[in-house]
Length: 379
Image 1 (tube, rainbow, N blue to C red):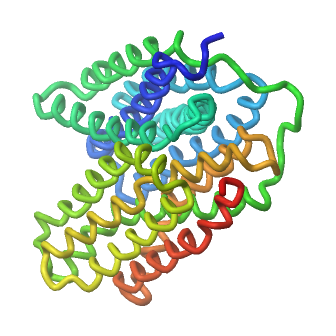
Image 2: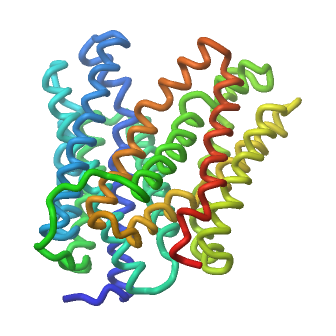
């Protein structure tokens, strides 16, 4: 069995995170092509996209059970291969039904690999006895940038969408095959329950993870509309804020392991969430675009290392098996991304988008006040 504390094992873990981020990002540029190919309206498209989320959530629950029995390695390999083989189907599905089925399968591959890579990362970090989780999550963000950029570049060359997906699939296959022999074999024990209802610390971790993912989803779906509605930028430049946010989050995660090693998890949660709250205040009170962009920067930097720390503490709780805890927390995070932005839209409709963002800042304050409770086993 490979040692968990080896450069090759850490490289394989990073490759797995890269594949997960790359895979989901490859789908985003294909959405307009799928809509045009099937000639569906926005309502039908929304239902089709929902099937991806349903497939992800179902797979996350199953992955928690399977990882407790067989470990994370086979699930990572299956998820990576699944993303590579199913992606081309998304470019050729000829009816809403076939696209919905393909998206559900693609979501299942994504959901399973998302849970499994975090379980694997916890094992690797535990063996290394130093923070590594932020760096792993940074590779997911980098994979997202790379996937979107590569797919967009290929499509801009007037290549057929199917050909573009085949090229991206080959890249994912190569990364998955390279990681395969270097991933850890199962370190899970076959004993223990197949399902445990989340409670106690796991519920708190899941809530905080949902909040941080909700903030990320809100920045993607509503950040541009906020600054455009405030008259700070034109419609053509509305996406700059999310670009600033994404770059800040990626940089924060690349530097996060060193920062957390120096100041500790508790201080990183406390000050990170506080910086994010400050970013919301700057963004919402900004009189000009430059200051608003500073708000996006602070939100990205502040929230960058919150999720990696929350996943780390899923490994230290004792109320349920680690694999099941990670599955519960990951599912809550997806719920924050999938359901949260819709909630922001409802609040925006009733009380205005700025009010919805003030509520996001208040929710982020829950992370601040929970920092001591979450990290109390690591004084």
